[in-house]
Image (tube, rainbow, N blue to C red; front, side, top):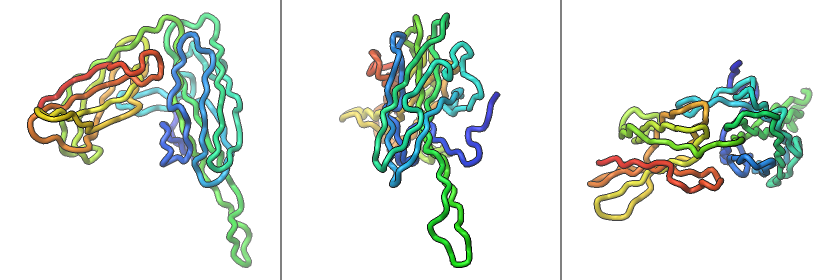
Length: 271
């Protein structure tokens, strides 16, 4: 069953954005290869006050536009992360600017089919409901309710013979009006092949006919997970290229595994 991404006073920021959430997780993604049985992440309290935090598992399904739908059950019924994964500690308190290391232990179920499985680790700062300090004469204390806030990162578990995924960029087109970012965008389709996700970043360079290449756009977390084979992508440009030259778009693996740094694909768009 599906449920809303946001409910009640729950606020989740699906990728770590410390400027917004004031909570950060390092690393921003975890990829566990077939022989890995544990991983580690660090939670940082960037807020101006201490807080209590809890680690939970959530399941998301990726959509072709890069958004996510929350699932009530595991993404793949063969792998239930609630049964296979343990965290230590699961709940903890942090002072201002404090940090906490979390150990993730994995025990794969017997007879697990080969393939790639995914869940998301959610670290929430628990809501604080306490009387407001300012009390007017003749009135009782007023309850101050603060929202739960948190960040979520993907955890990918690979089991058995998982081949390196490939992807192709196609149909690149420059759109200059009526874009969501209100800036010129390079829009394209990225198609994934294989039984693994592509984990990477997408960068565009302006390559003038004479002169040095210049980065004009960058997106991290350009991931195409196994439940989708294709993503429609819009790449906002920091500047509009002028003169003779071409835009080079490069999709680069940043999975922090042995394939990290490889160019998954690239394409040039003439101007």
